[in-house]
Image 1 (cartoon, one colour):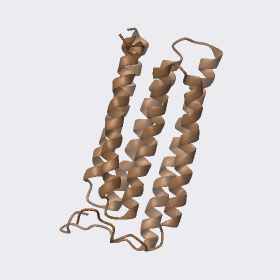
Image 2 (cartoon, chains in turn red, cyan):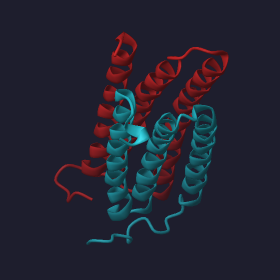
Image 3 (cartoon, helix red, strand yellow):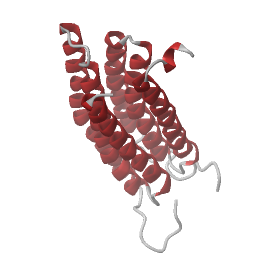
Length: 110
Length: 103
């Protein structure tokens, strides 16, 4: 196990840590609007860290095809960075337009 | 020893993908019990964004990275378009308050 694999493991496990935070936050937050906070941010950051780990690990045996595959993985990261906040904004816009009332302190958790 | 347990990195990817599947089950619970239809959409969106990472890891397990990265890119685009279309559809008041599985 060389230094590259250690970097890949650290990036992958930190990405899995953030994805865990996102999943727990989606389960435990009290409201629809507050649930969008872990769904929008933590999934994006966890995907970024894990995908960076995969792009680094893919360059282990270097060739032109492996470089192209790593560039495609980084293209997926760029697309997720554009698309995931946009999808989250679309969902919260649907909630606002439908007139869904936000949760306030003291109410029952929904 | 099975082929996919050959090296240490392969087994790290295998158990990471199993853990990611467990996280997808957690998001699926929110998609089941979510009181409004928009909560279910949050759960489905979270499952989709985890599926992209899982597809890349499956590509490493099968040593076919060049094929699975295209599948993951197409799945990311498809998930994004599906969530946007569903959120445009459900912005009417229909199904926002009376959909709880457990009351």
